[in-house]
Each structure stands twice: as structure tokens, then as C-alpha cells.
Image 1: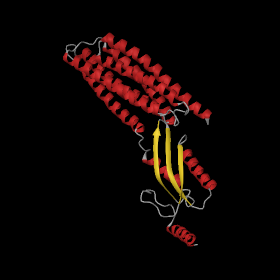
Image 2: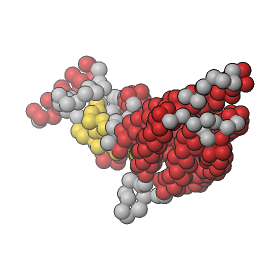
Image 3: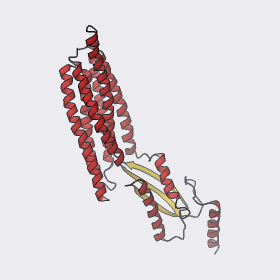
Image 4: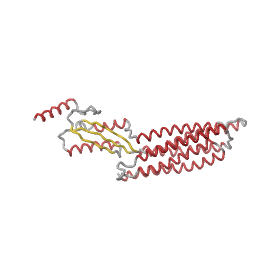
Amino acid sequence: MESSAANINKRKSEVALLSVISNTALVILKITTGLAIGSVSVISEAVHSGVDLLASLIAFLAVKVAGKPADENHHFGHNKVENISGVVEALLIFLAAGWILFEAYRKLMDPEPIDSPGWGVAVMLISSGANIFVSHRLFCVGKETDSVALQADAWHLRTDIYTSAGVMAGLAIIWIGELLFPRADLHWVDPLVAIGVALLILKAAWRLTMESAKDLMDVSLPEDEEECIRKDITVFAPTVRGFHRLRTRKAGSSRFVEFHVRVDPTMSVDESHRISDMIADAIKLQYPGTTVTVHIEPCNCALAHEDTCGCLLSEDERKAVLKKLSNLSSE
């Protein structure tokens, strides 16, 4: 089990490091080209890649810390570091989008000519190709390991692909326009594309904020996952006569599930403990690494109103239990 966890952490670290290396190269390439040809949209893409680089570094550190086992000060592990990193990354994207909007507005008010837009097109093409490859790797490993940090980093790069394509299209219009219509003034296209880039980045930042913050707020697991957990419990009926107070949450890639189950009051402690272990094992089989807490209660078939799941016994079984309890009390 420890070896498997170590392998997962190693894979997460390796793909996060790949993202750091790729983004470093793209930042250098884009900023150099953007300054050389005087394109605000290419420079905005360099800023975007700079934010992606910082996000990749944060993701790399987050998966390192999240992989640490629980200790005396962190009884539930360090997995929420991944959610914190996602929120921080989203805030960085908001700041980058604000800077891009400011620069684009300035260029619209005071247009500047772009030298050799063809170089910008080539750089955006290289950037898109690199990000398609790296984001695909991040998504694959992120989904396989249920890593919030890696999936957040992948979304950054996926956004970069779309924005790079937009910048490439804008520069291509200017480039072709200059060749076909030398006197046409198309320099307004560049800052306009930069504004589109910023708006796409803002949308991605908002989505990432919501995704990362929900686990920090201990939002319950998705309904389909909770339904699977309910089914894992109900298969143990009629030994398990009912269950209620199902509560779930998630921290990074770790799930936490707790609930109360009702069993025969005459059942031994050993037997009830065995049943709770079997239920926990069934849940962990579907969602590895889940922490399951089961509270055992005696069942007298008088279910409380807060028991949202209801009794798992048939009507005949309920009547039989009530009759048995009535006979015991009369004795």
C-alpha cells in the first residue's frame, strides 16, 4: 500500500516538473519574441505563460506536500494543500488578466506598429503544440490520481492553447493584411485579441476558484458518489437494518465518509465491528484511500425523522423485530 502511494506521488511530481520545464521555455520564447516585434498580444501571452509557470511551481510544491503522511499535527494528512494551491493559482490568473486588459487598452489608445508578425505566428504555433502535449499528460495523471493541483495546472495550459490560437489568428490577419493591403491599418487587431485573451483567462480563473474552494468549504461529495456509497451500505441488509447521518467531504484527492448504521441490539460487539469493517472495505474498493467512520447503533425499528435513508428492512421484517422486542420487554 505504501509502495503504491509512493509510486502515485512520484508520477504526480514527475508530470508537475514537466509542466515547470515547459512553461519556463515558453516564457523565455514568448517574452523575447513579443518585445522584439512589439506585439502586446504576444507579450500578454508571455505574461499568461509566466502565470502558468508560477502555477506549475505551486502545483509541483503542492503535490510534494500533499503526498506527506498524516502526522501528530495533521491527523487527516496534508491533502488540502492541493485545494489551497488551486485558489492561489486562480488569484494569480485574475491579476494577470487585469494587467493584460490594462496593456491592451493602452495599445488601443496609442497604437504601435508590429514588426515581423510572422515570427509571432510561429511562436504561438510552437506554444500551442507544447501545451497540447503537456496539458494532456497533466489531465491524464491528474484524473488517474484525483489530483486537484495537477488538474488545475492542466486547465491553465488548456486555456493557454485557446488564447495562443487567438493571438496566432490575430497576428496572421495583420501579417496577411500587410502583404495584401500595405496601406491598411490593422494594428488595432492585436490589442483587441489581447482583450479576448484576458476574458478567456478570467473565465478559467473563476472556474478554478469555484472548484478549489468547494473542498476547502467541506462541500459534500457529488451525488453520484454518495449514491454509490449508499448502495455499498444497503447490500448488507438485513444485517444492517438502517443507516442515517451520511456525511461526506473531500480534501485534495482524499475522501472522508461517515455515517451511522443500525443493527440488531443483541448483536455482539465483535460481530458489529466486523460488519462495519466490511462496509468500509466495500466503500474503499470503489474509492481507494477513503477514510470511513462507521457508528454502530441498536435498531428498535423506531426510526427517527432525521433518518433520511430510512429502514432497510421489509415491512414484514420490521413487524417481526417489533414483535420480538415487545415479547422481550413483557418478559
